[in-house]
Amino acid sequence: DTEVTQTPKHLVMGMTNKKSLKCEQHMGHRAMYWYKQKAKKPPELMFVYSYEKLSINESVPSRFSPECPNSSLLNLHLHALQPEDSALYLCASSRDPGLTYEQYFGPGTRLTVT
Amino acid sequence: EDKVVQSPLSLVVHEGDTVTLNCSYEVTNFRSLLWYKQEKKAPTFLFMLTSSGIEKKSGRLSSILDKKELFSILNITATQTGDSAVYLCAGGMDNAGNMLTFGGGTRLMVKP
Image 1 (cartoon, rainbow over the protein chains, first blue to last red):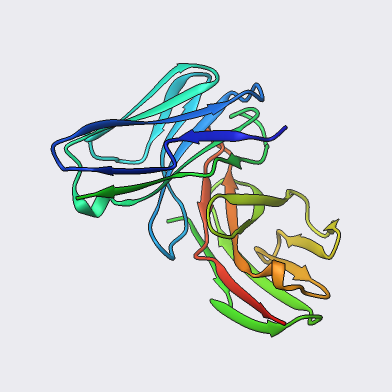
Image 2 (cartoon, chains in turn cyan, orange):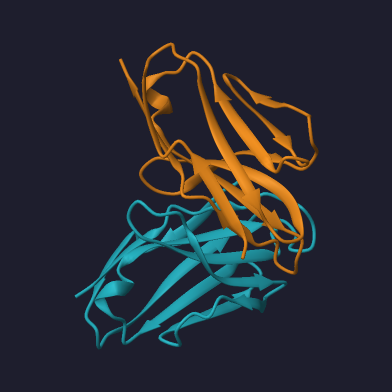
């Protein structure tokens, strides 16, 4: 089983709203990732969690706030977003952040900010 | 700055053709080269390469890495319409988190 699930599939929010994206994996993976992907562009790394701790933040604006409540769950809290934040948000996981393992991606949440 | 470059940007072929997709990389503390296929949503993992010269195969797809020349190729033989997708390669780094740097992708269209 190499499944990463994400909810919701689609999200439309206003610039003053607060919403959260959720990601879940039950593969026992200890590294989890958030990526942002704009149309016809490759995924861009936002955050990396290694063993439930934030290990990499790629200079992401504070209106994006990640959280890793346990080893299976990863959230991305959104607040005061801008229209340019509209994109496909992908979650991924890999078995061990310290070793060479492939990343498996979830289906993504397509976010539209109005 | 880490860089992964893919070529061609796009490709149109007919069913049954063989295609070769290219990926060159300059990645700090390089650890691995990964290939993904992306249709409408999430990238789907194809291959991970860590050693030079060892071909990996899965059905009609194969890939090889050259760590001296810093490139990889993805071959697809006897292409089918279902192979139509964006193919992404990514360089994996040896750091706390196993970060990936993605190339811009090659958009492949296979016509019947």
